[in-house]
View 1 (cartoon, rainbow, N blue to C red):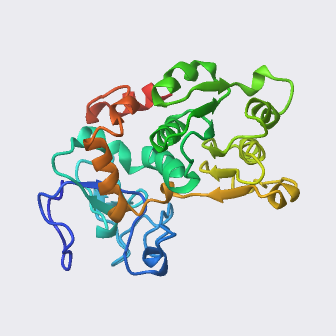
View 2 (cartoon, helix red, strand yellow):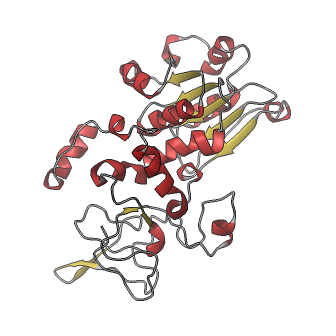
Length: 293
């Protein structure tokens, strides 16, 4: 909830309900003005910045020493200071303890399916990695109307939970003595229509691309690999009319699009509660990390 605003801030006012986002939307740069990009020149994620853009200084300190801002949000604090371009004004009726999870991983996976993969109705979608982002990608495929959603994960204990998010079938690569892209191609008469990779593992990224159908298949990479990782595949996979795409934050522009994602939840078209397994008070934040592990 906005507590106060600085000089020149007109888009939000004290009392407004907002979602803080690790990336931003200045609305002025070429990326913000493009209908095809959400990678704001001024405010896209920067893990090294740690200070406010206006004066290059931190707004936090302890015993006179500066504490730096984490990815522009610093949300492990009861009060924080943010650039206006990184807060999305939302419906004040939305419960903040639920829609807060839309600020990062859930929107990333959801948008990867809905905005980037764009599976046609009754299509087949493979989702690699069934963590929170992958489950959100499955949810997006379900909302889009996919008829078969195949979850791919090395951990079979995730499969039952994934059914709640629309997964209809599951493949554990460890159960097969051939590459998983071949397994998926056999299951789907030549390949899936769409795939969404949510692991950051370079081998999974290659598998996700090579498992889509020639002629129309689209693979979307969401996971973040090691910076030195190399993607290797045969060029014929492209010449056979497969498409490979990447996405950042599900191609959502934070200020423009996140309010609409919140409305999906308010209209009960997106079930955010499914993603929340525990709720703990802020004072027990370390317990929350233990629960995640």
